[in-house]
Image (cartoon, rainbow, N blue to C red; front, side):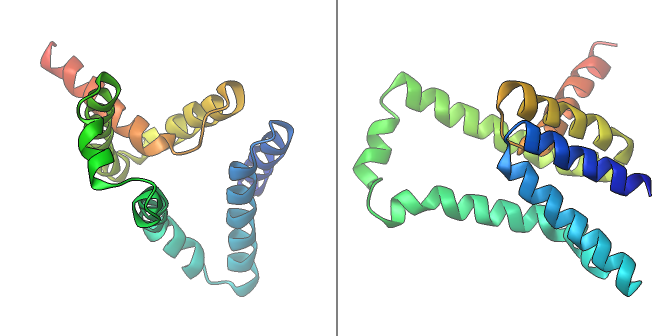
Length: 154
């Protein structure tokens, strides 16, 4: 029962905070939870938990590639982006984000007790700073880097 209350609280806070991305996500998870309960088979919910992140990354990556497909971004635009300070910082940020995500997934798998803290931090960023809820994966990577750094200097 507490799962429903928690998801319901996220849903209500998302509605109040006008964050439709989290509203839709909470509704999807709530519907999947109810279906799992009604059918007495948690397969769909487990599938979403096990593979949803990968599907989300695929859809996100496809959306980012659309400007290349529609001709908005060309090869020359891409080459010229490396000639600007913003472009160089963007490449560096992309590199760091990909690295963080790459170590974030194993951290969440090996240390699931970190997930609630990542969710709370992400939700706080969404609600109070108008962020976007892609944070848990990158936050897990940052957590990994910070903990590895702390362990190194211990």
